View 1 (cartoon, rainbow, N blue to C red):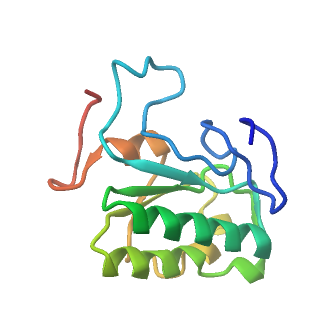
View 2: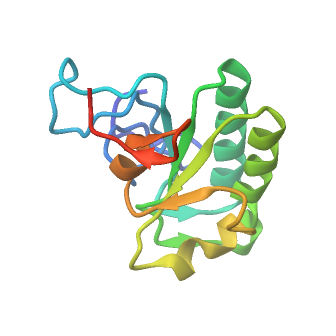
Length: 150
């Protein structure tokens, strides 16, 4: 799939936060990869509207990433502008799976629109919520602090 193109379930492959399905190592898109990359952190982003098929695809992709590695996973909800009732609790379910696997699950969401993503999250105490993908990527899993890029 080319960057920025939609697939059949409504997710988009992109390295831009909020643009859709995105798995990347963690540098801001305007930064040279050689200068910045938190090791091992993966990002999975949702499309602007999360309906039942998009939630199912997000769930499948996240579960596959959780099964492949114990590296932290950031779910990017910063671009979500609508969530249908059928997608309710999809992130909560992933949080339980990540917890069972002892994997750090982080959520990035637009701080100006928490009411849009709240239904997707369910229990917000199960994971950390960040105001941006970059903030989530900079968090050091072992110390619970935000660090600079290497």
